[in-house]
Image (cartoon, rainbow, N blue to C red; front, side, top):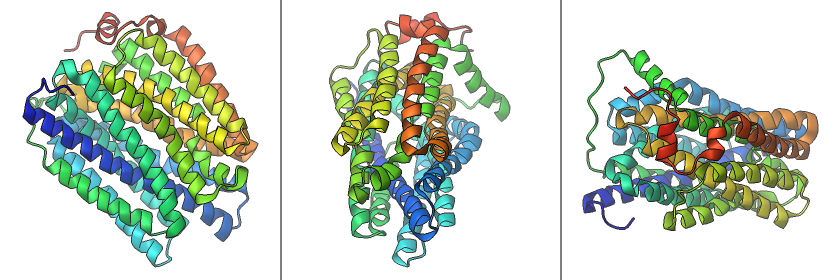
Length: 423
């Protein structure tokens, strides 16, 4: 940020950044530890085979996605009608309760699969409100001409936190099972304090139309924006097939044999690659040939996933995870910039929730798909097949949405492909 915005806007943006960094650091670590404990309990306590335990990891993704899917329309509407600061703080409060419960459960030796699955579902319900509330604050405090850079800087918060959180979670888990959850609880308290310090934000006038019609308007807006629709669905199906992160406990414990700390490093590697890209984009955000760059990024993501699945070297595996994270960051940057720059503020919460649903579907349903595939092919076969599938999806989407490869910039291409004007 170069300071052309009002100083108070910069202050509020920094608080949004800090909120995102603290909350993502906390919950990416928690999610890693929940996955690790699920796999370990399945293998050690219940005597499951690696393939059966890997299947449970897929189901863990499913239980997070179901509440996310059901609550997405409500979350988007509330983000457009309520104070986004209060909505974000309430959602972070749910994550805080989850961290506290798991810290006490581990301290008392009372962790079980039903508890882990139940609290994973609660996290899915909380997360659906975080995206459309916190992300939608940024355009309210940052001038439009600075928004691409602001999106990239925000990505640094997310990606750097996603490096620190998993790595710290793995290290802390190796020391004491309750420790990663306790640390996460402290970080979430700080995140709630940060978002509470953001100044009140002016909101658009509340529409008098029925809530269901308002929800439908957000979906209709995305559906008729062909370039935006192509971006969202490309990411949805490519990551759905190519997701490797759900299988990382299986790779850490039974394929590469690197244990808790190795698992933390593997979970952090994609975010490390993404952080490097986010730092570069914050300095020189791309605004030329955006469609082609996104397509190439998704294809590279699939190729790196395939290489990771076939690797038997821990260091090569880490490198491939970093590459897929870097490629995914390019795709995420382009999509998020399009959503934020080209969505009217009165629809931004609903559109952000739809974009968040696509991301969640690609991640959590991707975990379920990986778990099902692992039950049939084993973890290695499931990840390798998914990487190849992501490449195939990229080729198909290039043909289905020629607008993607022809897109030269953000807003002009977006406006040219609009099927209906926004009312």
